[in-house]
Every structure is written in C-alpha cells, then in structure tokens.
Image 1 (cartoon, rainbow, N blue to C red):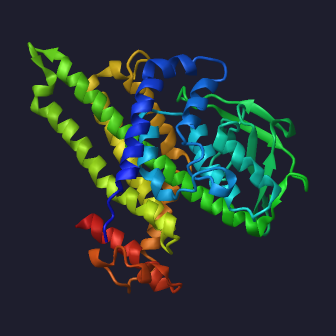
Image 2: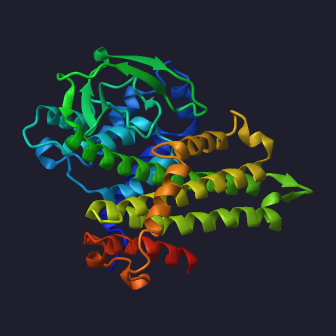
Image 3: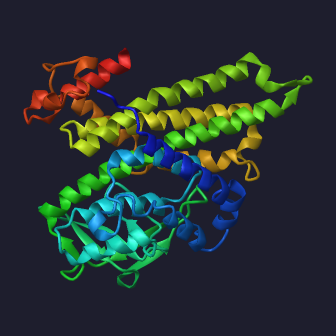
Length: 380
C-alpha cells in the first residue's frame, strides 16, 4: 500500500509553513504572550484566511470537509511554530465533536462560525485537569459524568465561572471552570456523549503527539544553527564529534516516531479496531522524541538555553506541557500494554500492518493483531 502524502497535502503544508514563518516568528509570539489575554485576534483572523479553521468542517457547514490524515503534516507545523492550544482544540478537536452531532442539530450552527474564524472553542476533556483557553473562548464543550457515561454540554462564557491558572508555558492559558449542568446546556446524554468524548480524546492525543514531533524538529534546527555559530578554541562547537552525536541522536528519535504517528492518523481516519493502541503508541514515541530533543538541545546550548532571551526555552516548555496533555505517559503506557497483551494468537509481521481485514473484525484476537505488529515493528 502506498502511504506517501499527496502533492496537495505537501503543498498545503509548505504554504502554511511559509505563512507561519512570517506571522508567528518567536519575537512576535513573545509580544503576544506578554499581553493580558496572550492571544492575538489579528493572527487568529489571518490563520482563518489560510483555511485552517475550516479544514475539517463539513462542506455543508461552510468548510472543506477534509479528513484526519490531512492534519498529520499541518499539526507538525503548528508545533514547529508553537501556536497556542485554541487552534487545534477549535479547528480539529471541537469540530470533530460538533460534526458528530445529528444533522439538523442546533449546535451544528457553530461549525460555520468556526470555519469563518469568528468562534474560539475551549474543550474541557476528562483527560485534562484544567481547560485551555477557557477565558478567551466563545464556546465551551464540557463533560458531565453520569452512570451511563460522560454527557456533552455546550456553554457560553456567561454560563460558567473561569479562574485563571499559571503554566510553565507562557503560550498556555489554563483555567479552572466551574459550572452547573442543566437540561438547557446538555447536547448529548451519557451514552451518546461518551462516544463523542472518546473520539475527542483520541484526536486530542494525536494532535499533541504531532505537535511534539514538530517541536522536536524545531529544537533540533535551533541547535544546529547555534552550534554552527558558537565557537570554542577558535572552532565552531558543531565540529566537535560529541556535539554531532547529540544532534544525530535527535534526528534518529524523530525519524523513528514519524511512521508511528502517520500510522495512528491512518487508524483514526479508518476507525480501526486497534485505534487506542496506535494512538497511545504514537503519543509515547513523539513524547520521547520531544523530551530527548529538549535534553540534548539544552546540553549543546548550555544553561543559557533555558533563559527567556533564548528561543529554545519556548519550544522546550511547550513540549513539556503537551507531554501530559490528553493523557500522560502512565495513561498511554497502560493502554499500549493492555493492547499488546490482549491476545498472543494473531497475524503478525510487516505484511499485516495495513491488513484492513485483520484490524476491522470484532474478535479479540483480531483486535490485537495490529497491536502486536507494533511491537514487532519496533523490535525490527
């Protein structure tokens, strides 16, 4: 099976990268983060003009109706330029939740507003202790636990109390949200809402994973530039073999994480039975790549790499907070372990990696087939 990205997908990624290179430069982001809201309406409007806000919105609701795989490259660029949570939470996670509502549902009217860039959505998923960008949101999607599952509630800012919290990442605006569930705010009951929240959790985890991979690449690029200019003993430190090994190891981590990430996007788009295992594997691999890039980049920069004046600290801190967002290492390690140990009797090997029949059946052994393939691919 040919799993390369199309020319259109690559061209769109390159277009977004050129746009963000100009509009989201580190010095500009610093100025934005130091404002009270930490957000720029002007930048938000420009992002909407690029089509990102309506990428996943169905065509009937004013969007482009594109699929999950189309986000695989774009989310890496979002991470590379360290854009705030509200972009992915609104344009990717929240759109998926609202688009899952029945046709004609009143709440679907928000989709067209998202597509045109006039609505910012905060998602309070059960996996996240606090809600990102709640203070700046025009709409909040919040869960309410019942015996049947997590209900989906839709609230506007006047229906809840938002208390700002601190974060190590200057780009992040976390809040504690207090509210009261009611029939007026309920969009889906527990049974229906749980399915939507589960899918939102998978999208959020995959979005965080893709961003961490982009952040790892940005930290690598910053480090390469730095070691080419920094000199010791009248030589650029990039000429020292020990420094080269630090950076080469980052490249290896990034390249090993990419196929795992792309495979998880494929599983999400096609609703494969081993979806949870694939996404947890991707989250863990991309997290490892970003942490490794942080550690080695800081090693070659020295202690100054953590100071506010140096761009590296912006991307390190962003990677650290995304590591625990949408499920921390313990959560995803447990899911991955459970999937791998579910059944020892299943088709394995590279030939079964994209075997749709092996991953679409409902039996436990076939549900675990691709999960076991993961382990063999990693060992290989």
